[in-house]
Length: 142
Image 1 (cartoon, rainbow, N blue to C red):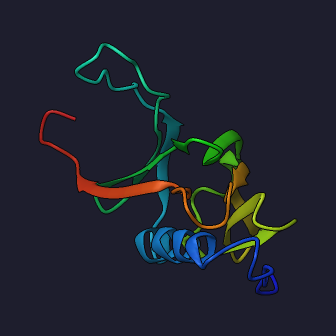
Image 2 (spheres, rainbow, N blue to C red; image 1 turned 180 degrees about the horizontal axis):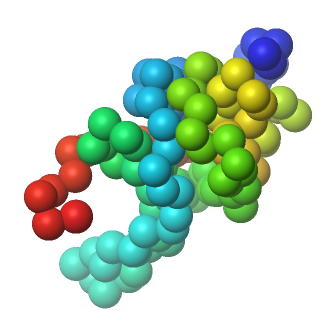
Image 3 (tube, one colour; image 1 turned 45 degrees about the horizontal axis):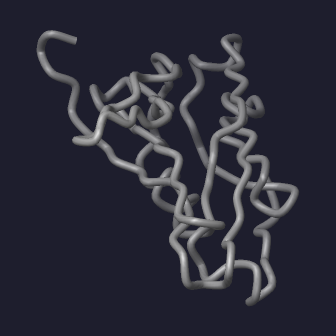
């Protein structure tokens, strides 16, 4: 549905396509039950990081995207738009536009979820960037 984007070798070392692949592997074939900001974690120094973006799927899994920041590099979810009229459709893919700044989680009826992403590799490629993505099972209490 979306053409594969290719970034200049000085702009990205493969981190952004890898992030999209990780998200794609987690969500394709499932439906979104809920999409929301989670709670930020407090580290041992008392710093409360930005809250993760959490996608809850129909298979009982949570997909968390955490922003990253490393000196002059980083990745941040700026905003998201869930299309509730399309969440009953099974996700068939994840694509990007605008240099990996707009991510599209789509089904046969169009985008189910759109993510606006700000990112920079900083001083290529000395610092880390890209989302920290994790997939976990929902606990029985959730």
